[in-house]
Length: 272
Image (cartoon, rainbow, N blue to C red; front, top):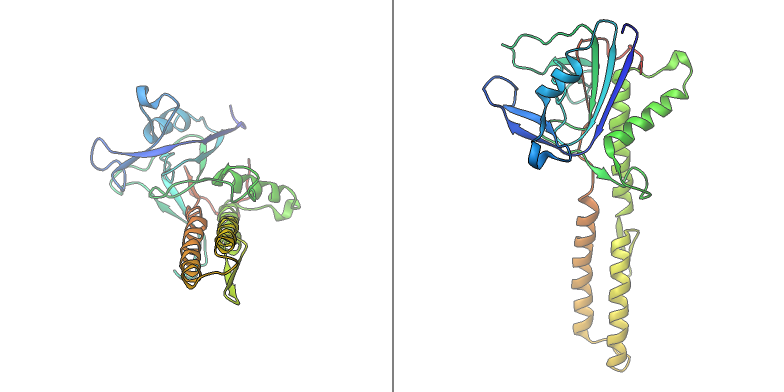
């Protein structure tokens, strides 16, 4: 009824499937979520999500949705997607873009819906321990949203975060985790001895160090030139392995916001 605020959150697997007919989506793909019985009962399409959750909203009712899943960019099928200001594009303002085919009638509902999604349609949403500092694995979008909202709750009423700034903050939280991960995997060489803070490389160093010590004992305390050469070669391989493993979990996703109505992203305060 009028004045109600609804909240829907999904954190799980997502996918894409080709549209049944041309002109439904800009990229020709339906975004989907995968329920536990999807192998027998099928996936849930963005069309169904819109029809069941969003289209029936009566006037005066607002719904916020979060989809922390792969390919979830426009999974709500809401017509407007937020564009953040970027220095590269020379654009200093938040703005909206229409995210449905131009020849399609703009979807309209009596109520209002705002959807936060974990990534663009072409991206995946990670389940990662980067954001928690290795304590536990979380959905990156969910973690970033909660952190941003909690930070906002500590602000005085006149400094409440806008929807646009919340989206920007979510992306900052994810990128900050990436920066920490990059820093923790850095390596330097001092006197031909590798010093690293990467846990994997530290473990490999310890294992190989024990091997070299055993080999030297076998040869009467002398390390052969072959062993020294192998040491350099293997340690170089370990660096590549460790750097590869530390870079692989970096988060490339960019959370998105879509809405049923265009509003001022920079000034409208978050209203959950």
